[in-house]
Image (tube, rainbow, N blue to C red):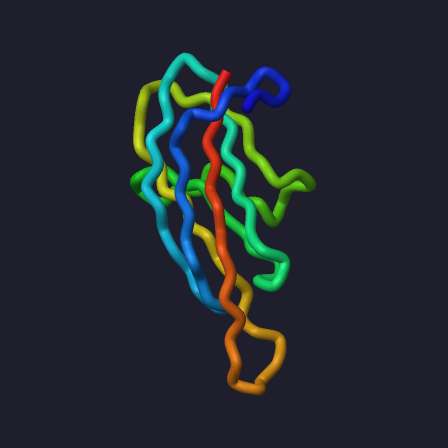
Length: 109
């Protein structure tokens, strides 16, 4: 699938998560290309946020400071970066946690 010149890289990560979960995913990005990273989630999970960090956990991007649900960037060399995904804590205290799916898509051009 192609959007604005981006092609799907074939790298797809899915996870079933609960409210309050936090997870780290290691992703590979290649030099010489403009990379696009997109995180999608089911609405029942609330406002899921994500941060992209280098191997030293230096923050490169924080979705909470962006108006779009994707991040376009280039890397100077092929490398693995850490994607930290945070699912908000439940808003109610009835003891039932909602479960939902998160999908991480990678594209390039």
